[in-house]
Length: 154
Image (cartoon, rainbow, N blue to C red):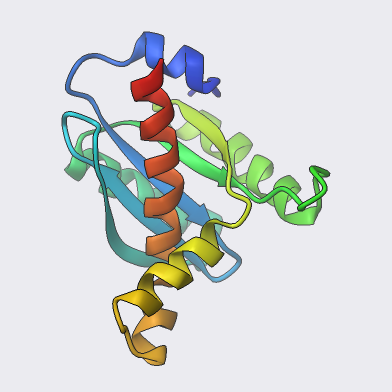
């Protein structure tokens, strides 16, 4: 597995490769998947986190099923651009995935992704309970869509 910049990812992907977006939380992992043309991101069911080994196994099974060519993982930077404990945990997660897969990871600044996802769910008039269930996958879709838009611009 390799960590690539978004520019390097653009150079390595084939024309119809599917990309997954990840919103890594302490209790869940939000998931989203691109279409084959990499224009749209769609949320998938949230993974409940348990132990890293089990989380990795489930994530890689999902990747195999969906034929994922790369992961875009949200990097939760502080609003001032500094890296806090969640950034360290995200980087550690990717480091721990390294021996388990050849699928590359790309970090994507996720500042305000959860806020944007919450607003989108509110605009769709989703109930509070369903918002809580879907927020992480909606955030993953928002993260992935930002990366897809950047890939298209490259």
